Image (cartoon, rainbow, N blue to C red; front, side, top):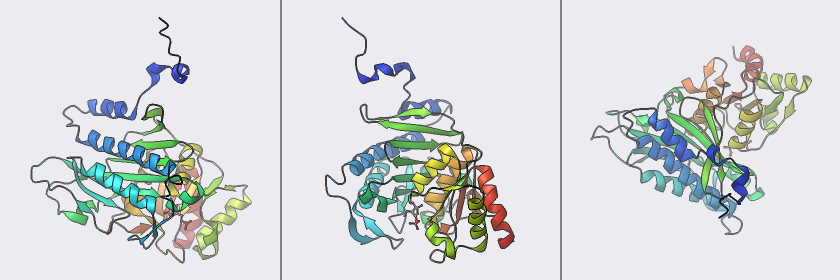
Amino acid sequence: MNTATSTSHSSVALRDIVTLQGHILHQQKRHPGASGTFSWILSAISISAKMISAAVRRARLEDVLGSAGEQNVQGEQQQKLDVIANEILLRLLGGREGVAIVASEENEEPVILRADEDGEQRYCVLFDPLDGSSNLDICGSVGTIFSILRRVPGSPSGESALLQRGLEQVAAGYVLYGSSTVMMLTIGNGVDMFVLDPSIGAFVLVQKGLTMPARNKVYSLNEGNRLTLPEGYQKYLHWAQSNGYSSRYVGAMVGDVHRVLLQGGVFMYPPTKKAPKGKLRLMYEANPMAMLIEQAGGKAMAAPGQRILEVQPEGIHQRTCVVLGSAEEVDHVMAQVAPSEG
Ligand code: P6P
């Protein structure tokens, strides 16, 4: 009997396939005595990502594009898929015993799922369920961003339990629903990249220990805000354009950060007239992205001398300025901004 694999996978050395599930369990084995609680949470995120990916790819077929007719807590028009993605994550994470609190860009208040009277170590999960959802109608990149914190036993319940600096994150990542569905994940020892293989319904490890290029002459921001940017940022743009830089901007943080992680460069959302503290949310956009960028060897700053991960949050929906990417490229921006903010 011909036992050779005659499927399309025959070109893939089957021994090389490491799925996200296998990777998570391998990491768990490195922590003797680990209860598996954390692994189960990552599993819930993985399943949610597969469900959201399927929903995104069928959106136009099932007429779930467009506005949901409501505004979210940010005052932004909710897309139908924002609501669908949010419900999927709330439901999957809600079913995990190890999740104490979840917080979403789409919900004004955190959802308290479990108290910690039994002394079990539980976790808080914060997420932007469908970042850049306005790109959906034009088949542009959208994504899910997540951040995982420990629920500190005995700390006050509710929002204050979440107000931990980004340095306290135990894991962070995103899922990019682009030409393929890609997950970037860090649990604090490097960045690993997975691609969803629809033929087996699993995220497959494609790059372990990703490090980003130290430099690349590409900057990324919404240049429509140029005239209202603080002077230092306008000076940076002049410097970059005088030094042969290119501009790339997807309009969805996940898409822009993914390009910066893989190719280098710098992404920024500085203070603008419309968003004087910056537009991006600290807890579930800037912090998780900053952890990924720093774990990949880059820098992530809220201001000159202020790492994003060291910002002490005062509210779960607070916004921040973001300048992140290749270390050298972030330094070029800070060099132009620092004098004007000094
Ligand atoms: P602008 C998407 O709405 C988002 O929150 C980020 O994903 C993205 O980087 C930014 O806002 C885009 O904002 O003002 O350029 O449309």
